Image (cartoon, rainbow, N blue to C red; front, side):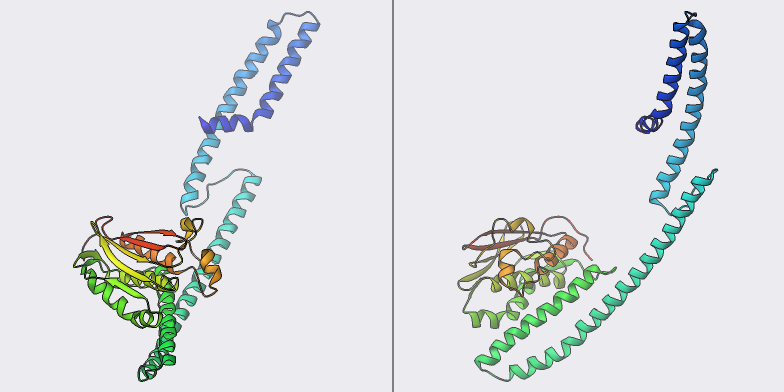
Length: 325
């Protein structure tokens, strides 16, 4: 019915013209005082013939509409046409399709080349980082501890690059199984131990003794990013890690908090908010990647915060059932 109404709207000019001709014929017969039946009868015959032609034309339009609707979602060949104008449009569409395929192929090749390059770079940069870490670990000075902290930040940025490339790639390496959550948390605490000591921040944590269904490596990345943000925006006080029933990991800090207008957008790519604009090093990728990873793992992640009071990040590890590998 919708297509038929659209068709009538497209043909309204011809329909109005026919009605105008019939009206002129009737008025002419009226002015000459001729019987109206003599005008109405041929007008009715013309209307019936016109309706038949209109129905036949609409049937053809409907067939072409259905064919084009299928083409929009597939790569089928374009339907055959019978007039010169339609053939011209058909050729234009064919050429546009070819150009689109060529552009897509070129874009895919460039993307693969870029991903390969940055993946290679990220792996190669790990070698000098490891070398510098070995040299600094042999020293115990305030300067070496500060350099180690900055080196740890570089390592996390490199890991963010690798995570982003993996998420944008065609393949993933998720291995879902039951893991001890404490075994995921302890390496993250060890990674940031120097930062806690240097910043004189307190870590409030007691062993959780909970097993969850997740990917240990990818969840470790999420926990690391959340802790990194907590450390970055907590000048003093405490960062606490605890568990809420049934299986929700909570990371609370006493930092500067997040502005209410920024909360709805903290998981958007490249969005930094007021705190991020104050810190020019902020990229807006950390929480975006956390959300992407959690979505892929079937976990939920949410944030509550008040400016000046701190932030709470909750990672729901019991959101939905996943197959165990």
